[in-house]
Image (tube, rainbow, N blue to C red):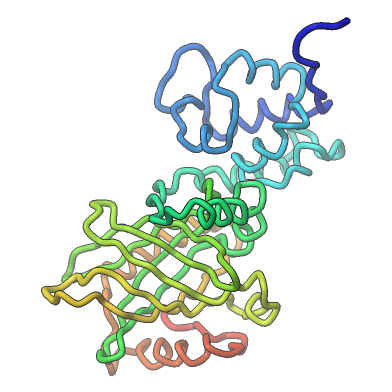
Length: 312
């Protein structure tokens, strides 16, 4: 009788694609470990990929095991079919473009640890938002967003920018920038699904600000998914940035800037960050103020094409 663990079922043709994906992503997997080594990537571990270099080398040489295909796809932020499709060569421009498009998504700042501690609730949230299940949400939300946020009392609209992209172990990663009293505050967070809403938990990189946002889940509404441009209205609560002991309550409209030509979401996000550093707020009389205010009404219904043109 054969002894030991049964041999893994391997997928022909996927090994060379794995090799090319690693090379295109600028990752190393040899014995010498540097900053770009796969084992230095927290995301590699989050995706449940091998800690043994010999195992990775075998996956390259003999093909990915069936049991690891989805994990590799999640790590590179691409559909599993990209590795399986025999019509797409590892050296084809289509393959390179898909890998390079997603290259920087895994470099988003690590999202904060969630405070949910009830064992059953935590298990259910993790199950719904696991890496194998949140790929569709990640693809739908991915992109650069201009943010407009306000509280009930203020006429002034504040500007912000966000980049949504990389899958995380329990949701979708997001990075953002807002400006308060001429200081740019960098934020990182995680978007996850619960019941029929999206939830966003975020924190500043210095961990002085912790906040929470909620919005209807567009994965459950064709009306929300068909908005052109895609936008969401979110309701938030966060620690006060001023001297008040009361938390800040605010609303945010996030309007996605669609990519065009060769411009990637990361480049658009960089432009938006430059914009909000120049114009952190919009007061009445500013050319974009009226259009920005109107977005809060439009994002509560089905916006017409062209809504969200503020600052175009």
